[in-house]
Length: 317
Image 1 (cartoon, rainbow, N blue to C red):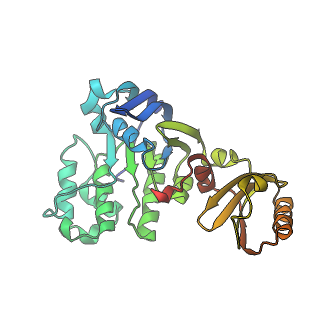
Image 2: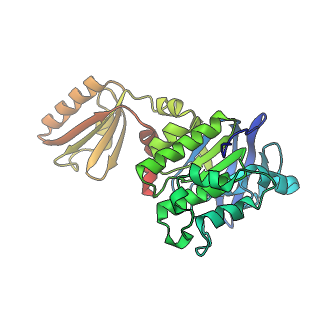
Image 3: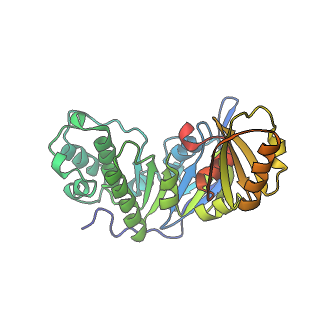
């Protein structure tokens, strides 16, 4: 039997309404609303301090909200905590495991916490640690510990899986395996809530995304819908020899230019008409006698939208 087969959910897997959490004068989560459809992966993205970690911890039952409501698999934490724990799996960003136990002993221990689940050796095989099952946790690499934490989150065949940056520190092959596990879980009816620092991972795994900043949801939708929200044909990045000789508003006035931002040595333009915008840019620089050191164009990405909305790259956290 697969470690993630026969998963069953019904209706909306998670429903969040008016969720609010403050720490003194700091409002970490400000009346957030969203739903996670069964059998899908919801990605939650946001810069450091945006409120995503607090939101996830409330959904996992690790923190209590000040106000608002949270339903997890049709139940609430204040009434059905034990029933929810039986049906969810959680991989934290940092999982501290007992270093003297072996991989096999660790997974077997986590399996004992649940009334039902999968054979622990099959879970170990699923996350690619069969050759390490007799090794002590303290002797594992960081990536192997990350895979072990994922295995511990899968031992009860969770209907809802929380993954907090699951592939940080993993090599490309192990990272791809995590993607396959998520895909298989969804195909069998399971639901995933994911945070990640990798935009390609969010685009690959998430059916729906919400981007949070300053405790509020700033946009939501499928990755394709969010990218389309930038309303740009392409993104143009260029490096002029001297930047101080013109203002951003002068660039915004160029034909086809919709948005301007500065990053390190480069200037980034979101443009609605690539050919005309580049032509206008060359003319603008020539009229001022400015040399162009570099120029690149690409189709808009989720990263471009994220920076546009939050002012940060996701990896800047």
